[in-house]
Length: 290
DNA sequence: CACTTGACCTGTCCGC
DNA sequence: TGCGGACAGGTCAAGT
Image 1 (cartoon, protein in one colour):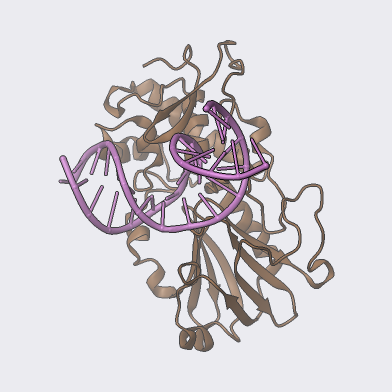
Image 2 (image 1 turned 90 degrees about the vertical axis):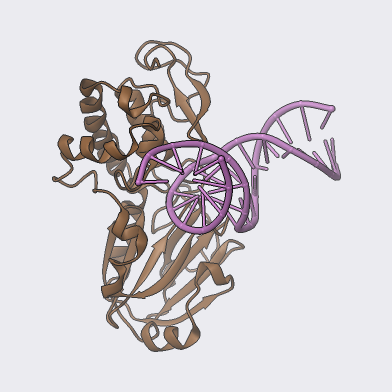
């Protein structure tokens, strides 16, 4: 599956910003209620005929602001994709750097058509993701937005802030804490494993047992791996693609994620895969001791 | 309140 | 080849 985390969602945001800002929605089709739950009368009133005026991101959530003062709020969860197709390549085949062929396909849940006859497809194999319309001023009031932690790539994500947010999870494992979106925003399974390897911390270490020096290193590693991945257009593990349907390349630079049975880049010890916080977890048993 | 587990889904892979 | 079960892992609800 995919696992869109902060760098993947930000890559989609950048692509969509370039491709669809200023376009007017002319129609929408959807076949799975949970993928797009809004009532038809709201769609007709606040979506059809509205322009996309801005695209923002908070944590792993995308916010497509409409001229109607509503927003399309999108969570890709594990297998969601937002792919734009212009008229010139509508229904196009399968470029080498893409995972997507003709659209719509069997995982297409929502199709937005713009007034210039181009389309935005929301694909989601496992149907965990969703798109929903919310009045723009209310976006900040949804529960998730009120509870979500700081953005790790913003300047205000200092070590002090990180340390203070971790206090709420001092009895859980450091991996569970990194995955907790109320501690900090945007980390998922890939970047949790990658940053813990970088800081030489065993993922099952209790937060309270991680030394201050290792926490400092972890804070730096989180920022480092997220920036590196953003530079590489995110990670395509199985089916993440950007707004043009293209893959990201961070996975080629990954140091532990999906590296089980391969030598550790630092010490050559064989990387193992285990389970921590209910997730598949990759680590070097020599560099990352409990 | 802190923390863990199960549910939500579909597709793939592995062992028999 | 077919088939059952484990696994993939973001978030929320429900349970301890």
